[in-house]
Every structure is written in C-alpha cells, then in structure tokens.
Length: 282
Image (cartoon, rainbow, N blue to C red; front, side, top):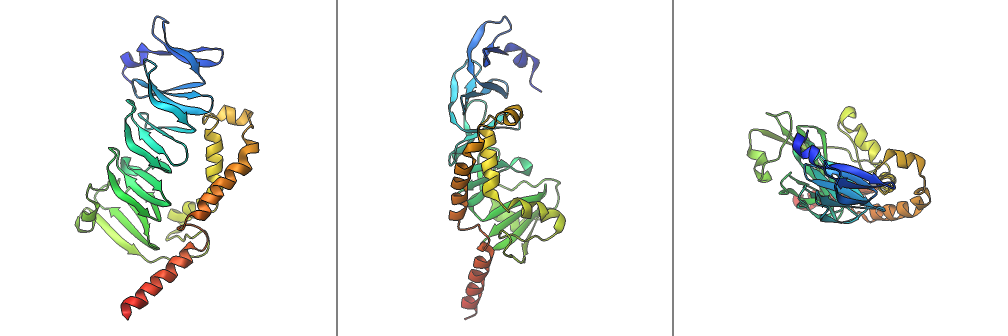
C-alpha cells in the first residue's frame, strides 16, 4: 500500500470521458486530457493519449514520451513501455531501469527479468544489471528455484538448492563452483513439434502448448494492448479485428526469420551437434 499522505495528496478527476489530476481542494493540477491515468508508485502516473502510452509525474510533467503502443505496470512500481524493438522498464522517476532496446521484457521469479533481442534470450536483474547476455535460444523457469536454459540445442538446468527462489549471482560464471547451485546438462530429444520436447509432463506441457503459435499469441496481445489492456473495451469494441490479418502477418514474418525457432530448428541443431562431435573425434 502507498503511504496515506501520498495517496491523499492527488485525486484523479474526469471531464468528458477524459482524465486528469487535482489536489484535495479540487484544484486542477493536470488538465483532463488523457484517456486513462494509472498510478505508478507514489508520484507518477501511466497515461494514455489516443492509443499511445507514456509516463508523467504528479505535476503533469512528461517523464517518458507518450509514444508507445504497449504498456504494463510491473510490481506496482515499474512501467514496461515499448513498441516492437524498444521495450524498456522505467521506475516512477522515468529512469530506464532496463534500457529500451529489447523486443520484449517479462518478469521472472526472484525479481529477475527475461529479455528478448535479436531472436535470443537473456536475463537482467531488478537493478538493470545484465546477468545473462542475449545469446540463448530459450530460457524458462518451471519452478521458482529452477531455470532451464537452451544453448546451441542443449538444455541446461540451474537449481538453487538452498533457497525456494532462484537468484543468479552477479558473476554467473561462478554458478558451477558455487555449492548453493546445482548445474545439470540435460539430454532431451528435440522433435519436430515446435522445436520443443519436455522432460516431465507436468513441468513442460505448458511450454509445449504455448509454443505452438507464438505469432498468434503475440498478435492477440498486441491488439488487446492497443485498447489499453482494458477488458471492458476489448469486449465491447472490436475495432481491432480488421487489423488482425496485417498484425499477424508481421508477427509471423518475425518468427519465420528467427533462426532459433520453427518446427525444424531442433533437427537442425541436432545435426550441427553431431557434426561437431564427429569433427572432435577425428
């Protein structure tokens, strides 16, 4: 919860279906010009103008330009803003905790963030420090204390054995020698079903299903977020439906260009690994 003083100092006001801010005496601080205002932390607000989002402070000053199609409030104190290749994570002062250079940013267990850039995944901590560079085909956490990493067709499992939630150290290279962690190289049979296979039915069924049509899922997410992630608007306004084929085509093309995805990616990588082993034996 926010401190009472911070919550009571500003109120959201509305006029003609637009929103602004006023103080306790109803003096207007921010003119009601926004489609939406969403509180972020104690002194900032996510705002929407038409279909674009940005960040302002409690004086109405723009902290992050109102130019992004996608927005998400993370942990109540961060705003994830971006278009297609410039996602960043901002605090309530507008400071980019995670630089706006990623195709996507998602919250992981342990306060870490999964980043996606140039078809590769990486991990950044809540202070913006890069723990894993964007060089992995996949990163997945089936449990709070377990991280699965796919690198050059080989799965690796990192388990923090002495904690319920995994947090990677600043120097990830020390994980293998750190007694708090267990690193296992896993032999999995990568088949032709979306390039994934799973070790246990429970842990990886969701991953298998969700990988079937990432272009479709990205399209739905994008079109929903263009409505401001407002469930009521989504149910009532279907103006985004005509856009679906065009947005899907763009997302489909993006995934087709991804050398690490596709139904034959696992087969391709297996062949590469076999060739490497033959070369090493010779």
